[in-house]
Image (cartoon, rainbow over all chains, first blue to last red; front, top):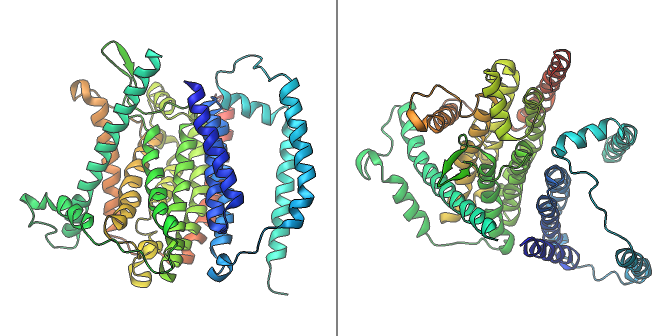
Length: 162
Length: 339
């Protein structure tokens, strides 16, 4: 039974990721991206990682994508409709990188072992919070400082006056 | 396999009952709102179709469904239709984590009167409340109309601001309860015998403001300010396509968020058992609909804020208040040795 759900969600995820890459209109592309983010969250839910699913929805599907949406929807229509062509040079450069990383991933899947849960957690919300704020407190705070710096930089770049 | 099948059928029945009841109640809420508005404005309200105008929602539905469908010139047709679904689906999904009462046994099986008992119920509420913003933004954008687009951008700024305040306001309750599952929050209130509104009055007031802002009710209805924007983001929609937006925003969201407020602050289904076996459900519905009534009452009493005031209030007054409330709650819970 789980395989059917996994298959449907996986197909949904791959289809929307491909759509996000190949669709010409930027707004349609962001809609496909949104759909793929929701599909990832559904995958988390089906795997029992409820907190990750919720955070995926709140942080990615809402907080981050909504700003892309706001920026893209305020582009004038003439620019939205203009098609800039396929990026041939970039495709040529990215092909070797992509194929090497695909090979590495394929090798790892073929030879490696899938991670097994060590001991089942009952309350993953509480455990995740504890881990984040005790063992991983320093990386967590560093990440927030990086985000703060990025925000200040964006405000500086966005200033029009002086 | 049999277990899975039974669970699937039980869930499907629950979904069917819930969607039917919620949509029916929303339809009659329009009648109730118009009667109430008439009473507040010293007029009669609908009274022609059926006794007391009770058939008016049906007449409205037939009228909306039989209208000619119009798609504006230059609209992005797939997104134009998709926006309706993006407005309706999150509002309906909000109901999936609302527990309407305690567990009961039917045909020897334990049945919970909620659709999915995930342990992140409140997170789902936040997520769905914010996902609703896409319906507004894309309906405004796909209509290719300036009024609609201004309305949708206004709504987006309101939702972004108030979603943050909502999160920090509710964190106080989560700290007290020590859980983010909707069922467990209610159970911890029943166990301690105190509704959280007594401990968290500031959070409740902030939640009430956020509820009005998220559902686009007065005084936060700048996205459809009739005087400036015609009706804002849904101006280009006609017929039942138009009807879906107020249905999702004004009725489904208000009912769902009122139910969430009851769960967080008013002890969910708790109350003295004076109605016999059904008393938890009756208490839950009574509390929810008193809040809904309060929202409707505000809608027909207050004037509208200015667009810039709304976001300023959110970021400069409500967010600091919510943060202060959170810090005080955290310190008190820590000192008293909470969970």
